[in-house]
Image (cartoon, rainbow, N blue to C red; front, side, top):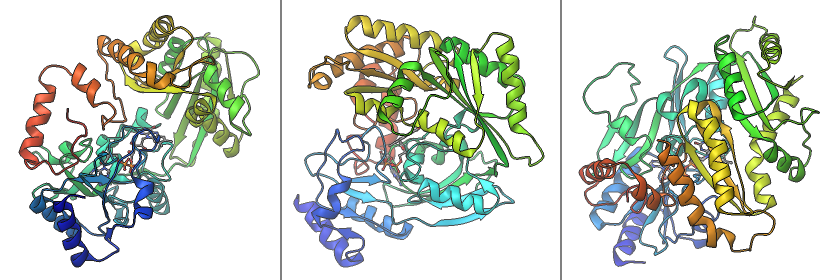
Length: 472
Ligand SMILES: Cc1cc2nc3c(=O)[nH]c(=O)nc-3n(C[C@H](O)[C@H](O)[C@H](O)COP(=O)(O)OP(=O)(O)OC[C@H]3O[C@@H](n4cnc5c(N)ncnc54)[C@H](O)[C@@H]3O)c2cc1C
């Protein structure tokens, strides 16, 4: 622990007491490694404020003593952005105690939630008011509104509702100089120059601490229909999506699953079974919803899928007969990463290219990677309609135990080069954090990093906000 950290901890301890200032290593330990367990940090303390006022005072102390802070929500991020540095030179700022849903306005279609509110808590609160917050993802039981905002998270309903950026009406944040930006009014129109709200969304804790967010709500779902379909190729899957898009506005989830990924799920995840009896190289999981209690969404989707089948776009389809079956279909999709982990070593790449280019990209990139690294298995699954897939490369059965360390960097460089050559992004929805900083520096378009550095220098000249993350 540095002398400056010792002074900060001592002062904060006297000011706030042990609820806010945690120094017991057994309480800190669960929070210093990233979710995948790949990056391990060290910190002498974890500060856990319960109000915006306490965050202001903590930031003032951090500035005074020049001690960096690492904001953290649920620690489910995929880029190790919330993991403190390994040399113990920063203090964790846990936002989990700021966990109040401050208000829900059905009239304004807005909820104001504090940064530490867990996503499912917000879902439940909206539901109790006949409304819905239409963003969801696999980590919904642990990730927080502050983390989702700071990574501009996506998930499975982006197709219809966009990422966090399009669902945030404004936010409250404490900036690195201790001032409070209050953008919670949720004004639909506000053109007073640069938008601080937009700057802080996706900033990964490098510009300030998000303390509360005004979030857009939509009416609660009256019914949903979930279908599992078999298609010949990613191109056919996209054709199916466009066929549906042209005929209904109710499609909000469309996930591509290769047969190989489905096989792994069936092999490793208990209580799973293939929805279709025949063989299909690719699958698309489709969810349609309606807020209209009079609408028969299942009949509508069934009719559209029958028409798509007749036109040869799709091989086969089955509609979930009930909620349990719908959940079982989603479980197949949501368990792919877990099944891959059970199978062996996997390299994950969260990438995007233009939607129309993605079908060809998946096939060509997978073939190129498999040819360059014999024995590996490469494939893509996920949010085809957003031009975003998780391009995973598996070690294959005969790989050495240190395959990840030995080959990982080379394979990732190849994937990132292919993505960049296709005009895409090496981080579609997970952010840069620590894990993608070097690749971001290597491949960012000219001027982009200089602009980020200039913004960082202007808003955090002392460098106390999450150093070593995002900005190379
Ligand atoms: C099973 C699983 C499935 C997932 N699926 C998806 C998916 O489909 N789409 C997707 O986009 N992501 C997905 N993720 C990633 C993850 O859930 C999101 O990145 C989420 O937004 C992180 O929220 P968190 O509260 O855990 O943030 P953390 O991991 O704690 O932090 C993430 C980043 O935000 C910063 N931060 C956190 N809180 C604040 C704050 N209050 N103020 C300022 N900075 C802050 C941290 O410093 C860090 O840089 C998944 C993760 C898991 C484990």
